[in-house]
Image 1: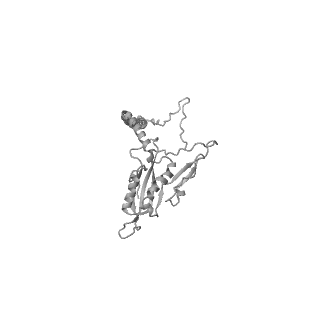
Image 2 (image 1 turned 120 degrees about the vertical axis):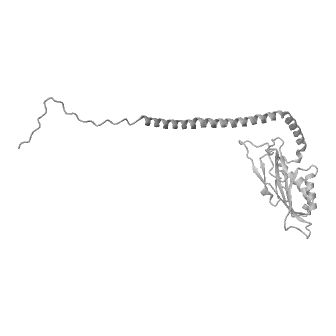
Length: 277
């Protein structure tokens, strides 16, 4: 049995067509482009807001603050300029007054020893508080500035201090540029008014004797200006049933003054009550 064979194609006939796969659609559609554009637009708006709007708002706020500050300064200087002539007259009057009252203040380091030996100690020794003995004095540390043109001696008060060398010290200021020193140092304070605190301890007396002593400190003619901040009687140091004599602690301020320096603030330093017992 013979199988039937397909007749061969005719010579020159075209090859049979093959089916091609369907072409894929575009990946970037208008919808995708719209979304990307929207994202870019939002990011751009945020960057614009942070970089331009916020920065401009901060700059505007700073300018407003500077404007208010400048207006305040202008108002202040305008007010001061209106009182300039009055201030000049008061300054001249004050300088004349201070030149007549400078003896009431310490002016430099040379005034310290003179104050203790010729003013403060004599008032104490004239009072029963000093004559009973046993009292001692402490004060703010004080450093003498010394150069070769100044005397390093006579810098320690003569009594009532237990260890005055620990309170009154010296600092040597050397020569400048190898040149010999011929002029003493200017030891005036840089402040217009500077308090110097003194504490009296274990001075025995009655209340009436203490009262008179304080009055002498504050009212004695040709005396230094002194402020008594406080006083107290030490517990356990009373003598007698009626405590007629007791031991007292006092805190006092005397003042350095440099009339050529500018005063700062409305209230001078060392006012009564600024130191306590």
